[in-house]
Length: 304
Image (cartoon, rainbow, N blue to C red):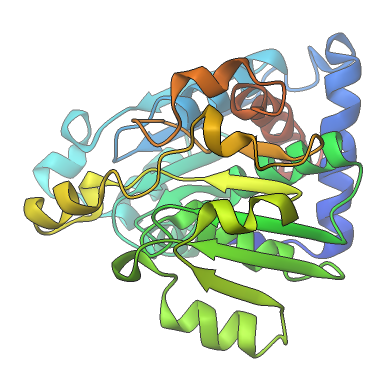
């Protein structure tokens, strides 16, 4: 039985198989519409979510399976003090596979240790968000045709943004990938990521607060919101929340074949005027998330 807790739980070849299956599903979704008939997905969301939870549910329903679960800790026995370990032991007898989001880093690891079914980490604190990473990789592969030889700009909250951390960990395994990391000083990537992943892996990267300067070099611009829920202090959040806003004027510096990604939800870090630019693909990216989660569910259930 295999779980997905971190993007690194998948080898490059396993990753390629899931992405290729996601592209196949995208082209002929009806072919896969009953492959999970009789199977159930449990969605255990201890933290609010729109896209991730609903895309998991859509993925399972598109495969002909069924869904059960809860959408907040308040509506589960966690509000009574039940542990993650006990919850997953019980859920293992109700469902065939589980997607879990939790505010505490490491909670899905604990679940996997006590689970009788595959556990998918749907986000744990500021740590990992592997299925968003699969979504990002599928989007880049589909639109750019490759996952190597890319310059990727990441802009916004790089300190707390688990989507950023997961994507960096995944992309460093491909050849000739370079990062431009754009953020205020207070929201730079964590030291462990800088030292143990980028520097240790001899990865080319630049840390800067100047987005316009580097826009012409980018193949991908990955925008993120400054997350109020990760701050201990409202004053710091208010001071930093509008640090970088992508607008039509800044898009003039970008190449014609550069694409803008965003894990969503957007607050105001991308002006709505950018939505009409053909290079803005964040809503398409959300759609691709359903296909790649369909591929992942099939793979972990041994149905691929």
